[in-house]
Image: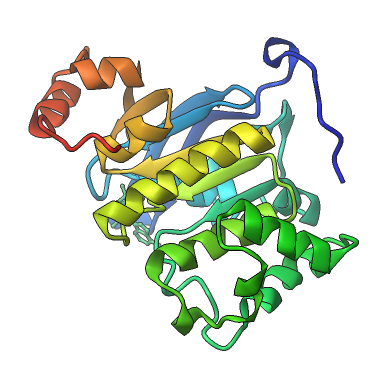
Length: 264
Ligand SMILES: Nc1ncnc2c1ncn2[C@@H]1O[C@H](COP(=O)(O)OP(=O)(O)OP(=O)(O)O)[C@@H](O)[C@H]1O
């Protein structure tokens, strides 16, 4: 559907720009600022990670970006155009999300081919059968997996189907919410390596949230440390690996993760 864009990345608009994003839960004195003045930019083709402890606001940022929570302050721009708080169909074609738990994200009574046919139908794609075979091959499953139900798949295979479902409509930006944390360690590496390869092959931009440094630095070139709803600092993956951080909180977080298991 979309032709390959050969424009150099430097001349292209930013894939995503988040300006002064804030999300409040509740009202009055009991209100909680889950996201507080968060700003960052993702270049085209980049993989960017948000890291931080449980409850720091990572998933809330992702949900606001994905259009799952339309009540936020600040602005979100996709390719230099601000997106409306209530997203339209075109947005969901271009920006897709992969969730943490492949056990709950697939309908138990839908065969894989039906899971994959649905987004094609919604977005009016032609040649559905060919596209289903192509994407199942791209995620390392192959066309024979069309006829399986979720209960006939392992956790890793389910996550491959969830990735296929997101990619079959040729999005440009993938939002990844802890995509490997529900999987066994050996399977985690397989899925991360698959995501790496798909990004290269399909010219994708990734935003991933995770509390796991090994996972984030395996996939992302740049990471931002979050705490209590705010971004404390941005670092390269190399800085993270070397433990180079300016903020004391980040240094502690990195030190606490020392000896973290690098992913093969
Ligand atoms: N729908 C909601 N209503 C009220 N509070 C919420 C809601 N969603 C999240 N929160 C609160 O907002 C804060 C940030 O949550 P969030 O899930 O974004 O953190 P996180 O860093 O992604 O953590 P985790 O890794 O555990 O998911 C937490 O204090 C959480 O309890």
